Image (cartoon, rainbow, N blue to C red; front, top):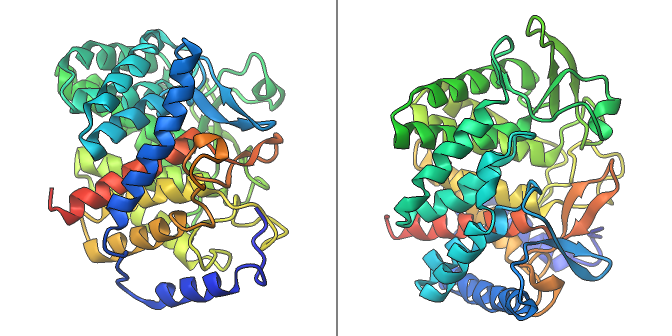
Length: 401
């Protein structure tokens, strides 16, 4: 999306005003209006799935049509998770019925060992179901953690993200690539220790988080996308940014994954270094010269054609959700105010879809991977998921839950 000043002059003035307000308030009824919109839009999405007679899993829009994905896709947990959040936000048990159906359709992901995203896929779907009372999902969480643990490389002390025997990953000369996204999978491990009493999952998660602080971050607290480790001695072989503009650039969604992941690590361990890492990574964002006035980042902070570069609403939604949680721990008003700013922008006509449009996804203008020519300026199921999670966290904060 190329937002031009002359197209959005009034909108820019509005966002400049709220950027200067240290504690802006969203409008009365903000949460309720967004819930109503989401319910209407998601009903259209569900109706299309149910009318097919199949269990389909929407990821994005490609060539004007909704793209559905198999359960092995790394994003397969987000749409079932969206159903859990719709149930929680509305209290309507119809959403719970869909949540169970679509969640249990990806049950066998708990045995997946060939990539790291089992944490995303299972924790978001079965993890939310478990949190909302589905105790029979315990076994799925624990088995998924066992599967993820097979990817731990003890010499380097990290979870290997991708295999390197095929695909574009095989062309990079990597041995043990680890991506910043992997911080998001640690919540599954923390959860598995809580459910099973087996502390090994917790210890592996802490090891990975510690190595990520040590090796993924630059002195300014921007992060690399990929760090490649030696399997022989655990040393760092390469530092790359495969889905960003350049190896030394700051890829926006990667920055958001780190903020979110270290916030979770602090919640689970109470180790202050994780809280500080999340805070400093966010400070990098808000102090960057290319952070836009509407708080929805360009896909990479160093992309060469800013302000004519695509935005990434998914990165904004991830950050907003993380900031609402971060506000529970320290400087609460500061982090909540920033989350509110981002959510105000995402809920505006610039980013929120019109009812019945956008393939019935909630948010427009996200980016998958520009270097791979994939999913550029499209809706994405994880943008919607984190938008709803942020909305729920905002609601609970304001209701003191």
